Length: 380
Image (cartoon, rainbow, N blue to C red):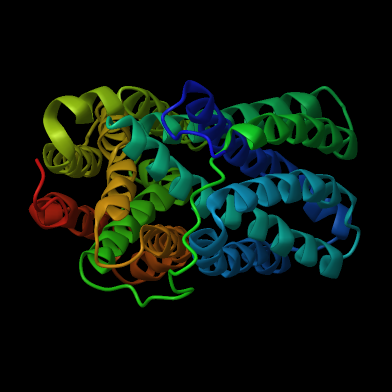
């Protein structure tokens, strides 16, 4: 007998999936300097190796939507989570560029597959609950990311070898997935649904908005510290404070996002969130004092926090194509935005300056409030 989607245990299992994905992904970030030294590569070669994560993720995302549509999201979540745990220690063990590149590709594939499947599962759980839950699920991803990066940093600072640290964290991921597994929905498969449908209609628009939002998030991670340092708004050793405030605001915004959306609806959430994020970028780009610039980071974080959760919810409720395939398309394009973001911003900044590149991001993000009525047609 299949489990009901509207159960506290099922919601907890979904939260665990998001927590594991964020935790596992963030464990890698503090390991990068150690991996670079271990395999003996320079910055250029390391950049090519890091690209393997994106290639693995996108390859898995393209497949995860159709597989989840045919067989259900549960096996993909479980397989992705266990693969994440199994791969993590090899990131510290790999001793050659080839070995590290192959490991990063598999690691990225595990991340990509669980990312798509957990969002598909979350849409099913939210639909059964008949109330917004998506922002809360995504908040657990943010919390997991913070915990993974912080704990790994503490371990490495304390002199614990990277291999030991990754084994310990892998040992934490496995029981979390095994605990979630029997509580995940097993009856989300649809045997008659196609394995591929070309994104069309509102799904294509949702995917574009997701890519734009993820592009802004990626730019805040990769370029915002340099922006405020070059503008003389922060010392170089303190420029990372802006992104920390952005991340904190994102997490707080998502923790309260479900209550907000339940009160004002998806359309108003997209309009208000998009306008707030654009306003934050304007504040950041016109600031003449450090405190004002940091306030801009907070506004962008609060504004961007609930855009993607709403876009996933709309993907699950549209009828232009199967929901699982729609979510897979949105996740893939969104992640492509993160991957392409650093290169695109760098290219534009080289031609017209970093500040001008961020102004272009503000203009791009205007698509969110301008498109809100279209993507929420028939609802409030």
